[in-house]
Image 1 (tube, rainbow, N blue to C red):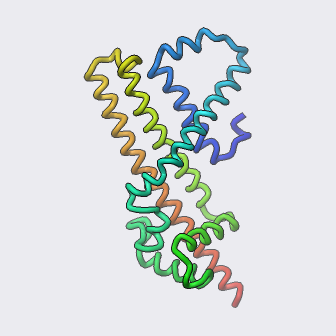
Image 2 (image 1 turned 135 degrees about the vertical axis):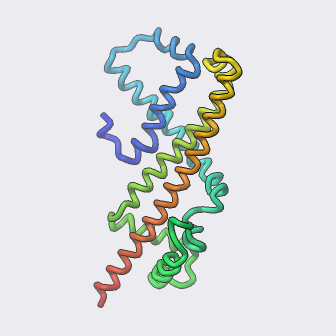
Image 3 (image 1 turned 90 degrees about the horizontal axis):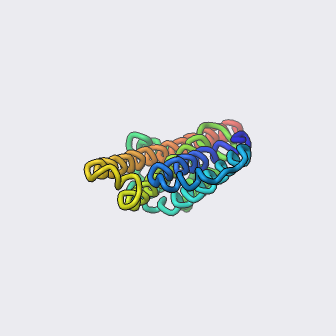
Amino acid sequence: MLGKFGFYDILGAIIPGVLLTGVLPLLFPSLGNMVAHVHFPESFAVLLLIGVAFFLGQLVQSLGSLVEPLLFWSWGGRPSDSALTKGLGRYLGGDSVTRIVAKLSKAVGPDTTKHSLFLYAEQLSDAANIGRAARFNGLYTYHRSLFALSIVMLGLAVPSAICGALSQGGAVATVIAFCSMVAFLGLLWHRTRQRAFYYVREVMFTAERILDSEAVDKK
C-alpha cells in the first residue's frame, strides 16, 4: 500500500500522520476507548487508519508550511538568501558562495536578484536530476513536519494535563513531560535548520557542476 506513495509523501505526511494518530489515544485514553467500541472489518480498518494518518499528516504538513516563515526568521533569514549573500557558515563557506554566484550571474545576468539566482540553480538541479538535492529536500520537509508535529503535541499536552492522561500522573510527571516536549522541539528546530542548509548547499554545488559541464561542452 505504501508503495503507491512517493518518498516525499511518506516522509512529509504519512510518518507524522501515523505518529499523531498513535499519540492521540495516549494523551486522551477516553478517545481510544471510544474508538475501540466501534467495530470495522479488518481490511477496512487498515484502510481507514491509513486514510486518517494521511489526512492528519497533510494537516501537519500544512502547519509546517505556515510556520516556515517563523523558522526562517529564527535562523536569521531564508537559507537560500543567506547562502547567496554571506554563506552558511561551516555548511557553505564565503569563497564557495563568491565562486558559485559569479557563475550563476554569468548564466542568468548580472542584475538578477539573489532569490532569482537560487531559483535558477534549483531549476538546473531539478532538470538534471543528479546529486542529492531531491533527497535533502524530502528530508527537510520531513523535519519541518516533525517540528510542526511537536508544536501540535505541545498544544495537545495542555488539555491532556487538564482532563487527559497527563492529569493522572501528578504535577512532577506533567512538568517533566512538558520539559521533554520543549527540549524535543528545540532539537527538531536544530535538525530542520541543518536539513535546510544541506539542501541549499546541494542545490548550489549541483548547479555549479552543471554550469561547469556546459562550459566544457561549449569549448
